[in-house]
Image (tube, rainbow, N blue to C red; front, top):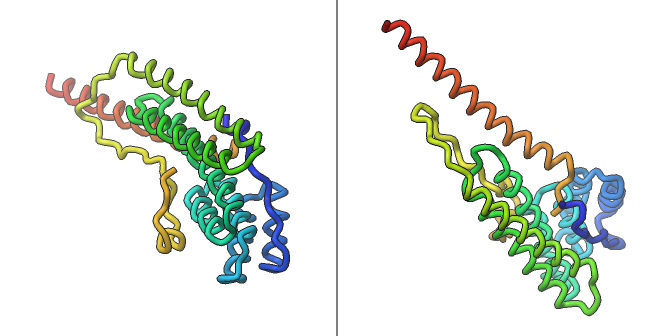
Length: 246
C-alpha cells in the first residue's frame, strides 16, 4: 500500500519567499498539503529566477502529497536543474513516487466491475517506471535505505499486479449490452496544470492520502452505478413496449 512507501522530508531554504515559505512549511507539517503547495508556489513566484533548489523541491513534495503529480514532477525537474547532482537524485526519488501513485490508481481502476481491460497493463507499466526511478536514485548515493526499500516494494507490487492481471484474464467476459451507451475510457493522468504545461513537456511517470484514494474509488463506483441504472431503465422500457404490442 502507498502508506508504506518512503517519502522524503522537506528541505528548509533560508532567506527566500518570506512568509509564504514559512506558511508552506507549517501547512505541510500539519498535513494540509494543498495549502502547502499554494504557499510554496507563491514563494517561488516571489523569488522569481532566484528561487533556490530547496524551495523548488519543497514545492514538488507538497504537490506530490496533494496528488498534483505533474506539478510535482515539473518542480522536481526545476530543482535538479537549479541544484545540481544532489537534487538529481532527489528528483529521481520523487519521480519513482509519482509513478507508483499512478500505478495504484490504475490498480484500483482494474479492480472494479467491468474494468478497463488495459488497467492492469498500465499499472504494471507504472510500477516498472517507479522501480527504475528508485533504482536510479539509489545509484547516485552510497547509503539510501529508504530508496532501496521503495525499489523492493515496486518489485513486490509488480509480482502482485501480474497475478491480478492473469486472474482477470481468466474471468469470463460479459456480453455487451447492445443498448448501452459507450462510456469514456478513464485516463490515469492528472488534469493539466496550465502554468506548468505551458512551460515544459511533462514526464508520464506520490503518495495518495486515504482521502484521495477514497475519492478516486468513489468516482469510479459512481460511474458503475450510473451505467447499471441506465441499463435497467432501458430494459424496463423495452419490456413495456413488448407488453403494449401484445
